[in-house]
Image 1: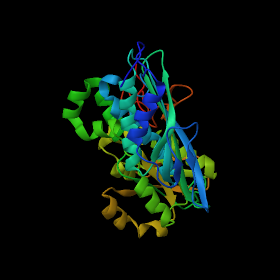
Image 2 (image 1 turned 30 degrees about the horizontal axis):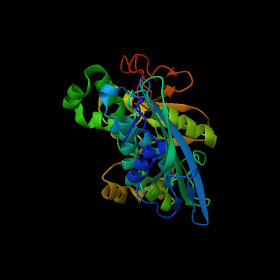
Image 3 (image 1 turned 90 degrees about the vertical axis):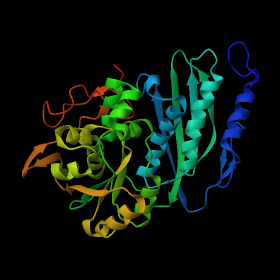
Length: 359
């Protein structure tokens, strides 16, 4: 690739052409992909279109010494695509905004693109365009995603009903454990200590297929992805639905990646697991649990119940206490509150559930 003295392709179109090569040829519903002012999509009639966007910033969401550039691009795309999973939508396309402060940014931008494009393809989405920019420092990735679902079938945060069971897919708290290890030990030592935890933080995977399966069977009344911590995301589902909830500590531990108090606190307040949180009538979903687990190789665990009275509670040994969400607050840039049981969480878990608060 020919570059000028500043490190950019001598013709900016050269970089765009390389992006287009990496993205591959457009196919329906994409009518026109990379190379023009806008991409063109022709969705099927009778479909609702869904949009979302997510950003990842160096020294806020990750550290360069923890991840390769391709992993950074893939991680950003996974986080954005997970919003489509949380709504039961089929991914169609993504747009990328990539920035680098490197003296020669072209190769960094290409690496970010390759990672994002790989995850998009694995989820059935095409990269259809975007933007590149020179930054004052570090790298950054913003991913806009477009998906579709049959009209009226989108799963929203609102819709939970009193008496619904609260269910989660997979295991909770693994990404938080991976973050703690990376921050304390660095990549190599962290992988020796707990490779699955590091893998979950560095290479999270959105539950697209699982979400589509659940939506197609009409099992869920409300759903969202777990990116900001179980307690915080459940509080959002309850607020949107006008209900309250109680979580069973023992059941949460069944879905937790680790045992004990630290495992419980990571499950409740850690983020970035990209699992699915849903409410469903117990009868409607119970018949699906075995087939779900056999098909996807991950658990589907009932961890609590929706109530008509407002408030979020945690029940331990028959006793209930208010559960205060302690996930990351993106505006305040800090943990919003102490864990439900003062002093019981990891001592230094200042965690951006989209990544890491780098202190």
